[in-house]
Image 1: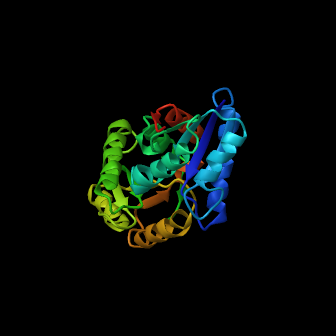
Image 2: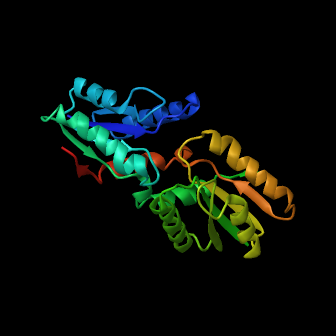
Length: 125
Length: 125
């Protein structure tokens, strides 16, 4: 059973964390054929943590988990922190396949998304 | 003349800032019909700053500038910092129309981008 774990940085602003949960809900509705389970995990400042998110997926019956970093750039969090956390949890579950997707800025769809966003403007002055 | 200013947080990692510049280059190649000028600005930790990026657009001949926040969530940077900086610069150029686009997480294309990214996986364990 395939699971998708949307991994975000986490924020002190509840609104920002809620946006990630909302996006997770939209993902769940859109990719149910490919991923039966869709959950979230936060690197810091919010819960569930990434290890807890992975454990929840496994409790739900996941046998393959795709960790999807909700990060724009390949900074330290994407290059070091998330893979290290995932590797640690992975050692405790050798029977579960856990893979990590690239950061979002690497997507070939990003330019289209940027152009779409640029058209949704509000006036400042 | 329309300009697009891609505004990112800025990072201590040069690689991360270079990714923003590279994305700006891709944008320039893709949206030249709508935006003659495409430049970048950084909130902190990298140059040019957002005010300098706006000034560069104006020097290039821009009469309308769309500021495009390269941020995923509507945190403090998106809600307060970027609009305040833009409003300050805007007061000095009342003849230039400056508008601010929403953060990227608000785009209706984000779910498609996430699903696309999830398929570009590398194995961890």
